[in-house]
Image 1 (cartoon, rainbow, N blue to C red):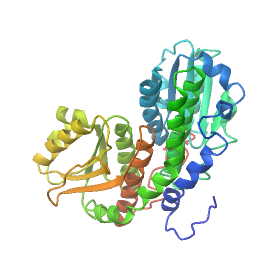
Image 2 (spheres, rainbow, N blue to C red; image 1 turned 45 degrees about the vertical axis):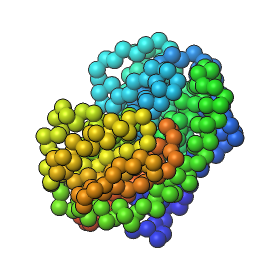
Image 3 (cartoon, helix red, strand yellow; image 1 turned 90 degrees about the horizontal axis):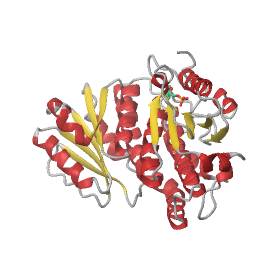
Image 4 (cartoon, rainbow, N blue to C red; image 1 turned 180 degrees about the horizontal axis):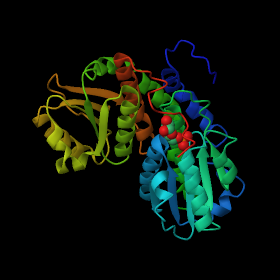
Length: 372
Ligand code: G6P
């Protein structure tokens, strides 16, 4: 990974396109053909993983969204209770941490003040608690102060809006989930193999998603005069919708909000008119039919829809106000959120380009927030 821009106009664009390689580098040396190497999390990982009964994830910003995706995996795939919270809340609310909890911090920089303070606070209140950090900075405060360290190998991320770090955090969390499942025998060998094979396919899946850039550029045009946008998803696509909305806010300064699609009727439906673009993520999963009926509600109110779907999702578009992009094909439980995030990154990037904002250095934001 070089820090030269090369053919790219912005670091964010370069980093979006580095994601297939960042995934390869993060998997490198951490898996075999059919299983995850538990030792990749440190020599004490096996004994710590054997003991834990709960996971508590703490992070900020984009890293928090990675944690939110992982919660679905820990509970759904392993049956292991998992909570996720933003560090600035966790550190001050005197949380109760159950015995045998693994405290997981996620951070690109390893220096985010709130995340670090939350870890310190938890260690002070609950001496002996096991901690693990998923971090992109080897020599950082979080790596020094955690029992276990898993480094994402995203390479230096310059753009303030996080892209490749997020993708590799999700890969790291998938590996963590699988490693704990392996140690606690919560996963069959077959299931583990399927997960590992899915992860191996990720670089290609991401590469394919990146090929939709031209289409997404066209769609971005319709955002230029908008002041607000709504992002919808269900299951792991809800945190991906949150991440999509955050990216749009950060770099294009358009107000964007994410909602779990099932909550539409409890409020945001009142916002829908011809002015507000609604972005939905529609993987082919057991919630697809429910999502489709949520989308009908939007359509019936004249909203402009942009749907990123799976090859087999078949969300039908029957008017000009309804764009459907077949963003991916054959994604699984783990690979879907990682892959569907890619077109959302491209969308916010191209909206920002049209608006002429400072993509790599958005106003009022910092890459690493080391003060409270
Ligand atoms: C800042 C950055 C975000 C990042 C967040 C958490 O807000 O602009 O891109 O997600 O901090 O940073 P961390 O380094 O802890 O992941």
